Image 1 (cartoon, rainbow, N blue to C red):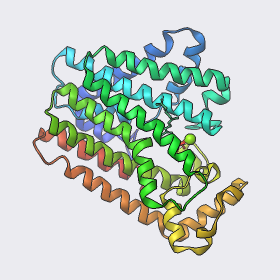
Image 2: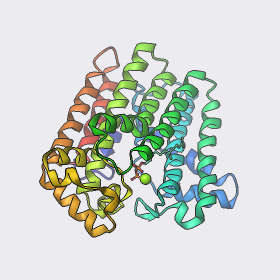
Image 3: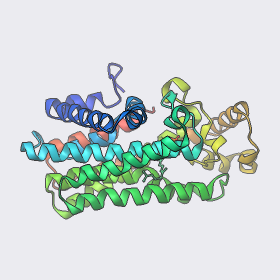
Length: 332
Ligand code: FPP
Ligand code: MG
């Protein structure tokens, strides 16, 4: 990754030039307006989530699926609404997830759940989720609504699957990837499809961009799971080993358990301290599983990029390739 990069995707913003930067600024303004428009209680809860920042990778994906100057003012507005809607769903899912996971810190800050309680966090997540759809509805396009609602259905299914699989690493790699498709890749698919739909691409191109998003999303989640084992709190905003303590079995543990009989026998429900989780992280790292997980993520990025070969504007495919590369670099 470029050392000068202010965000992991700075290089993408530079390559996209003023049109992409303007759209990113507009989406931020729109999100800010939405969070203050409904009184102080919602403003505080939604504002906490918005101020937490995040990479805004999903809005960026919406924008870079569309060529050059992004067309008429009307199309720009439709793109900004679509990008904000995806980010609102993402924010809603995290606010709800923190309630479900009893999580007190996200991105280094207190969660809405920790600072404002379960009820406010649940209702604020509901608000963000609903507002996403009223916003996208303004685009007046049923296919766009379908793309985002499909992702929401998958997010909820992913959450349920993760609960069902908690504390069990015998489900294996396939089941793990299935969960990642639902809980993470689905929103990447929606972001790419929304960009493609607003741009007016034909059906096969919308589908190809959806597959691109799906593979990048999977790589992103695998690398996020690697970071939970290998990363430090400053980089990730949370302490390592959190997935283990929550009973979430991820690719590094699944791969490490194939090579290390001690890890294969490990019962995650018996882990009850941060120090024990750290020791398991060390053991996973020693098995070589982190390198193998990173390799699998890189393969997915290559597979994602191969979806860009047919018929897209060369500037669009170059920007999308760059996004996919930066997803991997961020974690290397
Ligand atoms: C974070 O995963 C959570 C998600 C990716 C999705 C959570 C989905 C829901 C709560 C259900 C549906 C919500 C909506 C709005 C449709 P994680 O807990 O593995 O990662 P973390 O470390 O970031 O918490
Ligand atoms: Mg969580």
